[in-house]
Image 1 (cartoon, rainbow, N blue to C red):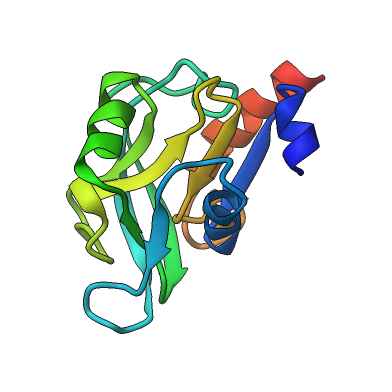
Image 2 (spheres, one colour):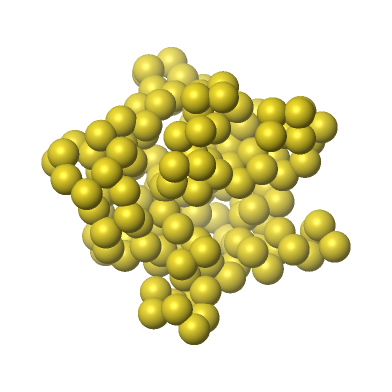
Length: 152
């Protein structure tokens, strides 16, 4: 996975995969226990922050999508300098927004981040569970449709 990412190939880490990406130092920060110390499983609204990536290029900045979360260790943490750098470099992919709020206490409502090249995405929500005919809806399709088009 590290070599694959090093070649600039897209790497997507969802939920525990996001944790693995931070532990492998492909993404900064760490995932900690949810602020409420409880497992959270529900739909949440996400605001798309950055669209200049293989994952979010089919979306619009500011667009709100709904995806489910299902985690106990989804609280994204990084020091203030790292958070400032991620924001300043446009590396925040998604933030928790509106319906469902921030379900885990993640710093600055972060739900997903990119590496420097925006070819590695780690996110806690589950876009793969937001694809028809699944009950969570179709918002996961925005990401997967764009990704499959650019990889074809």
